[in-house]
Image 1 (cartoon, rainbow, N blue to C red):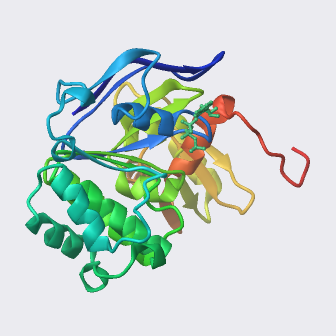
Image 2 (image 1 turned 180 degrees about the vertical axis):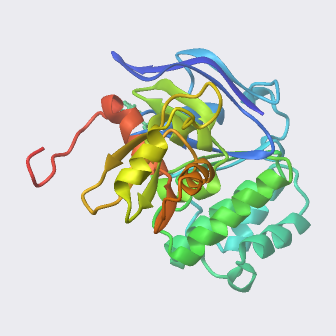
Length: 314
Ligand SMILES: Nc1ncnc2c1ncn2[C@@H]1O[C@H](COP(=O)(O)OP(=O)(O)OP(=O)(O)O)[C@@H](O)[C@H]1O
C-alpha cells in the first residue's frame, strides 16, 4: 500500500503538489490521472524519495522510502526519465541493479523472460527501440519482486501490441495481490486497465473512486431507442408506473438529431418492460455509456493549466 498524507511540494511560489492525501490499495490497478502539469510525476518522485516534500509524507507499507532496507524489493518503478546506461547490455544493466540491491543473479534471467527481452539480453540497450526500452525499464521495476509497483506513462509511444502487453502485465500484477499505480494520458487505455482512479488537478485531489463510479458521476449515460411508434413510447415512459424502481425519479426521453430517442432514468431492461406492456415496437434499445475521456474532460475542465483553442474558435 502507498499512503500519502497531506503531501505538498512547492517550487518557489508555485505548489506543484498541494496537501495531497490518498491511499493506493493492493489487488487492483489504480490509474493516476490529471492534465499536463497536474503534479503526477512530482508526486511519484516523492513516493520514491527522489524529491523531498515541502511538507507532508509518503509511506510504503507503513514506512518512508528512506527507511526501506532493500528498496527494490519493496517498490519497483518505471519513471519517464528512467534510463539505462546505453553502452551496457540489458543483462549487465539488470545484473548491476540486482547486485547493488542484494537480489540474486537468477532474477535477471527471470525478469528478462517476463518482459520478452531474453533474445536481445546481450545487446547494448542504447540500440533498443522505444518499446524495448520500456520493457527493460519494466524488467528493472520487477527485479526485486516488489509488492508495490509504480509506472509513469508506461504506454507512451508504444505500438498496439506493446500497449496490450503492458495492460495484461498490470492486470496480472494486481491479480497477484500487488499494489499497482499507473499514470497515463490515454483515457481509452486507462478505462480498460484501471479498476480505481485517483485524479488530480493543479496539485490537488479531485477524485479517488472506482473507474465505474467516476464515469457514472462525471458523464452522461443514456439508452438509445428507435421505434416506429414514438408517441406510444413517450406515453409508456410517462405512465404513472413508469419509474426505474420504486421511489426513483421520472424517466426522461429526448429526441436526437438522427431520429432516435435518448432515454435517461432507467436501464434497458426496465424500458423494454414498459414498452412491451404497452405493445410498443422497438427497433433499437442500446445502452450508451459515456467514455472515461468525456468524464475526465468534464471533471478536469477547470483544472487544466494550458487550454488550447479549437479550429471553430471555441
Ligand atoms: N524541478 C522543477 N522546478 C520547477 N517547477 C517544477 C519542477 N518540476 C515540476 N515543476 C512544475 O510542477 C508542476 C507539476 O509538474 P509534473 O511534471 O509533476 O506534472 P505532471 O502531472 O506529471 O504533468 P505531465 O502530465 O505533463 O507529465 C508543473 O507546473 C511543473 O512545471
